Image (cartoon, rainbow, N blue to C red; front, side, top):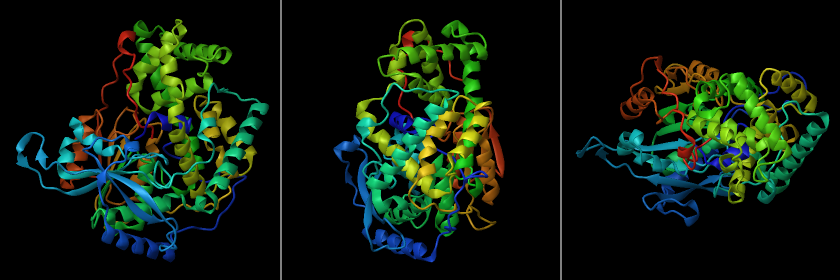
Length: 543
């Protein structure tokens, strides 16, 4: 789901959760269950899109997509209560179904329509999703489905949102105190206020229309524009949340839906409380990483116990505080880089080598992995602007800094790795100037939806496993596939053949494995010698 720029934008958690305010300091917005005006507006916009369709052609050079991918746009209302008012355009990408069985090129495969993907965020672009069809794990699906990606409202070229000058965004080096001082907290509060003010000033009245409910409505218009009577959808991370909203709003428009790494949709957890849960979960995943590094002390020399590896990390952070690597990589950049190891265990060898090399006098690998790149600044700032706009608008947040300080000071005692970085990412929501909504109660009773499929890794930190259990409970007829003792975020089409077997069976035949099924974990990454590490890491989505 996302490029490295998104990691920089999130600084902590991009894709996922957060929730209604804890006791003390919450503001209470009026309920925002979808009204009749928005429902009628969505129907009007979808009917118009069905008539207009999408004129696919060559992709703009700025998308940097190969000629096999075709691009177009779909018009959606900025405000669904006024479907004939201001329109915005969402960019869409597609690769047609191959129609050929990858195991027997002479055998034709019937086309099953479009498979639409959202990679999460909020703020992630799915424009590159159609390229997945060339990978072995996706070829059977690419034979039967047109693979369709898109950039949601606010993202990339889809009515892009910005809250500050990208040139001033993600500049290093920065600090990452585990126990921030009162003065440091005051500095970050001031920065959060400034960012929230910038969002309001730059976006104006349009800011309030960047919401998860509108993302779900946009998805229905996209369905119609693709010529599909019913939607086949794969949502990852945050994509599972507005996918679940879609299933609640438009149950008769659902054909098949996959929820990969599900966000907890409980209205009482959207978004502040989910964020606290996420910080706690990252501490466990950070422990998994350190234990793995310790098991390979013969390769990395960072310590034979998780505690010793922690000491090596802290030694590197202290050294970077005194002298940033490459002039740009300080403790904040170190923490952000190692946070990515909490998302994906295939990052583990690269991160461990970078830390080892740095402590042995070679900062090169660490600078390569942790520095912010100026050419990615605009994408990173855009991603964070959309992330905050959607989540700040979606739900009430505490507006009293003392509530944030109390909750996270308490949490940081047992989960210091991610907690404060997560706070600084989301703190503009405390000072947000657009109206707050009440989250929709995601729910589907028996027979209201076709069977849906939920995929979850048991130790996922970005979307803790309890979220998958809650979504499974709320969507009658859903099936939950669990990858046991694993923690990579986003498991559809990944290295686990068992998970992929369930994914293919569902999308190709509609078959689900009963209410629950489980898969053994995919193999842990193998340690790599330093000589194999340079340039080995590919950009991966974060959310």
